[in-house]
Image (cartoon, rainbow, N blue to C red):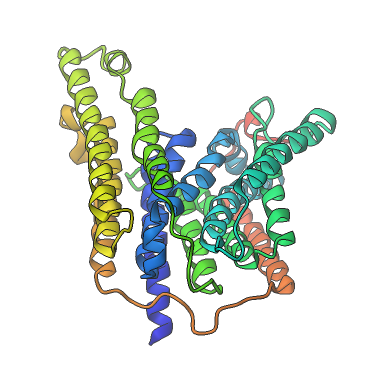
Length: 428
């Protein structure tokens, strides 16, 4: 019975990150993925029921936001929208395999930075300055070598920022290995496998749903998939690994800095990129009351941004720098519902079309389910946490996922008719 409760706890993190990632589809880019990562990390901390992790919840959420958000620089439009939907096996398989890599990079950085934050103790502190410098250098060098020198392009002529994420992830992995951060390494691997499989499977699922002609935003479900499976992988890596009994309590300035980035800077970037008055005015230019709707959208989004800032500051002040489970729950609900409401605004709340956005209502159902189950406080950690790295298991797991993609690729080419040559990465 206990095994079941552990998997329920892991599933809650998957539901949370999946919901955040589906909402991210309305905004895109690094800032949208960062908010989703923060939501997943807040759920992870709640499920853990560890008081020392409650205390450093803002640092954990920020690590997830930075890690999952960094992958937002990667271009995947041609890969998911063309190659993976081609009419021949080589190009479809190439598309799915590249989605495995891209989703894997999201999870590698997201899960890895979360794991390092959890593993930073007085005896084994993470040297964040050195780590960041190594990751930046790794990203620059890898991009220069793979792209500039070898010319290995994933989807030309689009950006090859994936190589930057790859270099940063490799540098982080090397830092973990040589500093004996084995538990974070496990989290990074399982999060990477989950995110990669989720991205590839989600795209295949999108094709299946189009084939059965269901009137639904099926691409949004594909976006949900990367967060759902990535969250499951991250949570499994955390709850099956061994961690120190006591973490370092963050200083007040560290909490303030994390709060500033999570609840002020990220929302402000999304506001600037997605909720400006001029943007809505242009979007609704053919509607008679376009200015009124644009103004309502912008003001509402601004009020949500202000609410986030003030509520975050209130909770930090009330907690006296040491969060309780109730305060972390409030933080999770505020952060998640605010993101959901922004999504409603961006897709027609004040035009009266929001009731047609059935996928948005599923976001709220997901959040409600997570909230109700979280209140039960089910066990999350496994009885016999792993300490060492099982390389054979990791290789076998990766091999199985790659083979599954072979099957999905063969099925995918049967789900639609002939496609244009522009859908092919390589001429057949």
